Image 1 (cartoon, helix red, strand yellow):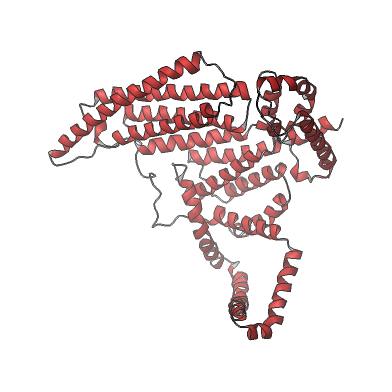
Image 2 (spheres, one colour):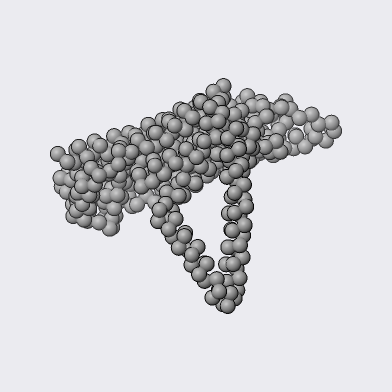
Length: 497
């Protein structure tokens, strides 16, 4: 296995174009992810004593399986993200803070080639590699240097250009021939595969770079200060913190009271677009919650956690965090009303996913304040929560969910033709089945929304999805077996009979 390991980057460089060139997501992603996890296991690069390695390895396999089921674009992105995280965990197996895996992966980009070549030269395979590199060094490298200078001199002098035009033309013809035999996308994917393979199997951390928060504790440590003035400064900071928390609790209390009355129980839609109500309002409120978390972390960054007179501040802070929790619920209710009148869309799903992380963040800050946890604890828990939320999102075919939800509620909410017509092909059966229902409600939509909501008419929308159906049914039989996914197969069976 030790000798075979040195061939794995080259193998991955060959597999990448085979599985990914001109292919959509499906079985190919599952095969690639499975091979990566399997090869990392057999080369001993996976440290299963680290819980993060187990979770992310499962995540890589699950996203591959999700691609086999529905092949959505967001799943491919999250699958790629999982592989990057896993590569960082192979480079530094003891990583506990998930974001550090990105730093480790980046470091592996530079250390992997060195360790690969070092291992090759210390291996029996090194003799053959040394010969190849020797000839490359005495032939190719000097040739590259000469070509660079010829190009510079040709650009600087027309006489020199006339004299060397034949040589430059020959090089251009050679490059054209090479990229005719091996297309640039195939060549590029091969290079990417080799780089990924080098990082996965040979990336290592360097001794001069230390990953942040890895060696710390999840509990706050009291810092002893030897001069008397530190207690006075701490009391002054405590007084300032109490005053700020009292005022902030009053301000957010008024905001929550207004939201509970007007948004939770007495919301009335005036027929408008709800843009300020949701788009600007939602993100501003989420931004305010993050500022609130930063304020709490600042006050409880040090010895104020251990100060014997901090009881009032602790109570005010907990009330403040609970009020932010109520504010986050208000954001969710705002988004609910938006869904109720304007149906489901990607960003509205994203708001709820983001709110899950906000709730986790607020709960962990509350635990941090109550139990004197460190910043390391917050980063560790919340980064893992973020990954698990992304992983959960990747398992669902949201286009079908949106199509089903919006067609079922077309009599109650906006059916946005421009948006719906561009949903994934897997949503086509739902859209086609709902056409009679949507046609009958077209007039009702115009009455509910007395302003322009779409550039397409119902006729345009109907023609577009029929055209997409024709293209899909005609094109599906010619798709490569590597592209196979369950959602497209079911769609084809539904549309072709």
